[in-house]
Length: 411
Image 1 (cartoon, one colour):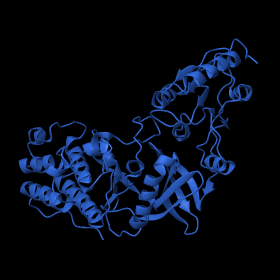
Image 2 (image 1 turned 120 degrees about the horizontal axis):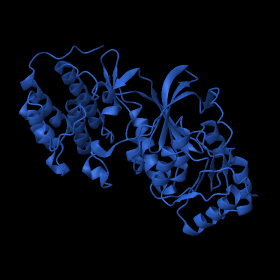
Image 3 (image 1 turned 120 degrees about the vertical axis):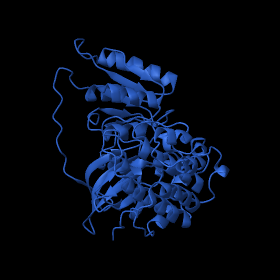
């Protein structure tokens, strides 16, 4: 049963149960001829996989830090890691497995608990590659069809969702399709609430908000489809190495941010995930707010890694009460908006506290620092009552610096 001694395999085991992990470690040592590296925390195991991809990964479904199925999906969504053979020590219905395979986010093998060690051993033998053989050149797979969409390419992957560029077949139009794994029963009410809200979002009509076309669920996943925008995120437009846009253009962007969020709040909808990466500047000069806070709504925490091919959220734009697990409100969005506006001016530097913005950027109005500081009070009750009130204060302060007319609106 043991492989040739001259081969050296790098096997990772991610298992929170110490007794099970020990049994798997002994088995892998016998089969592969070398002991595996064992992780009891999903976050640490994922970090190791991203840093040094193993020849084989054996993982469990319920792990602290990051769930096993999330690890599997994140690795499958990364070009540099999708080749890793994965054994998931859990069973799933055949229909669900078919969907995961179709989305290319499933494991190579599923083994039920309590683990049949003989079956696991033979599966390990089948999946361990020859170390001396070169890895096969990746082959572009033909587009897959899923729930009425044809998947064209992976755009990114985050804490619980993978985003694809897709074609909605019935209307033959390009869309962005975000797919979320269905996880534990405890999270089901929050996800259900989000998708009920998404039905309302789909009826919104605002020039600065990306249109939602469809939402739905299957045995394995939830999905949401929105319009595809050829645009540049503010993270790129205001990156450290990019040329700083003119003040009048930045002011137009700030106004459009406020207009979009104030409209949402008027419709009693909280975005939950306001940050520079969720604003896209289209070619026609119109800013689009996108990617409503699915991860926030689900109650899940972000993984916190940004390897090549993955795009994960960052807590720097998140209101303190959200980080503490409280349900976000309009004032939470207000905090995130102010932090996003700061990002436009910081350009890679972190201004703390916010009142130091005026010292850091003396060309900006001092009143702007005061308005942003109030939006970012740690106590939500100390912020402005509404987004419109906050927006009025911010724009009034900006006007002190630049009384010239704003960039004409696009129609």
